Length: 176
Image (cartoon, rainbow, N blue to C red; front, top):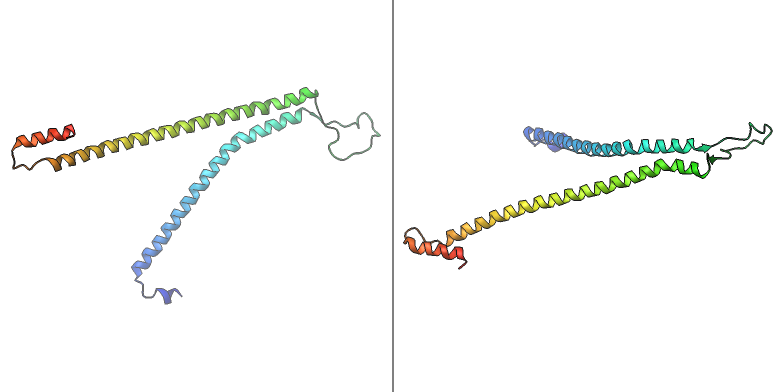
């Protein structure tokens, strides 16, 4: 099929088309690699924070649970399925002790979110200020060019006397 369709196409064009196809494939692979590297960095960043937090929270919760059964006290107690009676060691204080670490972690996380939002707003303000400075510099440059053009258009030719030209420049600068 290739021989039938591409028989009339010069070899140089086929070589260039093949090189172009390889380049497009390479660019596409680089874009995909860059995207997934960014995703993996985000996953690593969040996992680095969340996995230890969840692990220690669950350890604290498990160490404050009493999961003993009554077989040591009553050897003839009926067999049961499931976890049996589970309660916090120390009653309500055990629950409070097990929630201290997660609550502190939640407070720190909220503080971090507020700080990130503040930093993002500062970055946006700085970007806006930079764009304003660039735009105002560009506007100043355009105004200067426009004034120069206006002066060039309104100045008399070099063959006439200098006094009327000087008066004309004064009139332009004063706004006529």
